[in-house]
Amino acid sequence: MTKRMMLLAVVAVSLLVLPWGLAAEAAKDKVVVAFGSSIPTLDPHLHSSRLAHIADYHLYDTLMYRAPKDNYRPGPGLATSLKSVNPTTWEMKLRQGVKFHNGEPFNAEAVKFTIDRVLDPATKSVTRGNFTWIKEVKIVDDFTVHFLTAKPFPAAPEFLTLAYIVPPKYMKQVGIEGFTKAPVGTGPYKFVEWKKAEHLILEAFPGYWKDSPKGMPKIKTIVFRTIPETTTQIAELLSGGVDIIRNLPPDQIDVVKASPNARVSATRILRVNFLKLDSFGRASKTPLMNQKVREAMAYAINVDEMLAKILGGFAERPASGVNPMHFGFDGSIKPYPYDPERAKKLLVEAGYPNGFEVTLNTYSGSITSVDQMADAISGYLGKVGIKVKRRHIEDVGTWTNSGKEGKLEGMQYYSWGSNSIFDADALLWALGHSTEPLSYIKDPEFDKLLEMGRTEIDSKKRLEAYSKAQKLLHSKVWWIPISIQYTIEGVNKGLDYEASSDEMMRVYRSAWK
Image 1 (tube, rainbow, N blue to C red):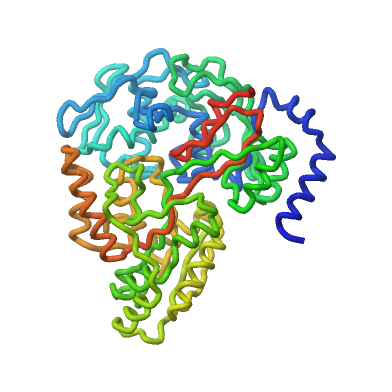
Image 2 (cartoon, one colour):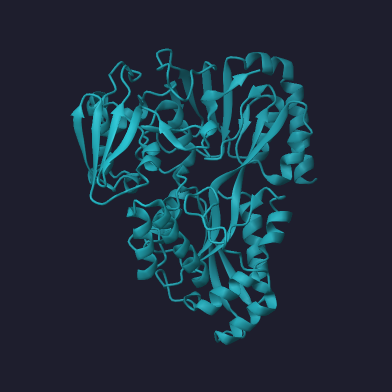
């Protein structure tokens, strides 16, 4: 029995057990979202999990907000305005009358406490790197703060969309452990219950502030259920057990479309998938340190065929790794064409006429059809004499720590969503600057260009710096870009909800038709 037939059989049984009409009737006050893995923590400053960020978006508010209707540009959130006073000072005016779920007032003290907490090394915040451009937060009055920077930082509005504000008094009272068990924010939904590896239950907050760009919640309860098996998620969607599923495999799209109860919502997102090559021997000395070898690999992989056959066209091919939705994208750069004969010649010129063996590191959680894609990459490289040894890491925490410690030798099949930041800095700096723990690139010229792009106030000069950086990245083949990912979500037909390009599920905007 094929995977598709097995899924249809499971769905048929589910429909017999749970009639659709009853499921739909029971769901009017509730939306159930299926997550493929557990949320690690409900403290917004202590994780880098996409699933946890989605939950955070409902529990908390951020200083700046991205509205889909405004093409995801940063706009007012808990802040009413943000302006540059001088090259190293940003002035922010805060919204008045907002309260946390426990009644504590939102004000300048909460902003300073939050940013100071993230920047304090003792907190061990994994989001600290998003705010190290802030030298100091100064309180001007109860609803005005100044962000002082050591150097100009023009992308400040972008990064302040990641500033989840927490209540100072409550946090000091309960500590990290207590806060995780009973988190408090200013978001449209308040915490009810969290059973790790099972579910997170949130309830609409009746005192939510009325001018929020998120809008007032229309659904009483949101449940985020942990369902690791994709086939089970799809069966639950079609039978009415869940209302939204993430990361629907392309080969299952037709199954969902054929259902009278569910539909597909898909859109291009910021996430870029690529092969990160250990070109400077950070983890170990390999043939990848030879530029001709890296060029050969770029010519050897038929990326276009992979995107068409494995991803069903729900992907686009990037040339440099930078997404067209990023500020700084250079569309003049073209991908390496598929040319296995040229790849073989380059390997001979590099001194590897008989090829060599190299490790391909992969992980679970972010890349659509990761096993099929990795197998295809291995197959193409094998045809030109490069034998690929696969190493899969299931746990994303282990994967991240291994990368930071420089232990991922050879190739990494990497995925990066830019923290939903529509600026090339969020990708190139974090994964390319030699001082960053996840970078496997070490090049002074590249560093200089990224530093210029990060601190230059003139937008034209920033674009020039990022253009030069991408051309250098492309010519040196430090990365082999594979795909710009689409989010493919399965959705209950009765639910007014669409997928978002910043990869943040806005369930708080949903409503039953």
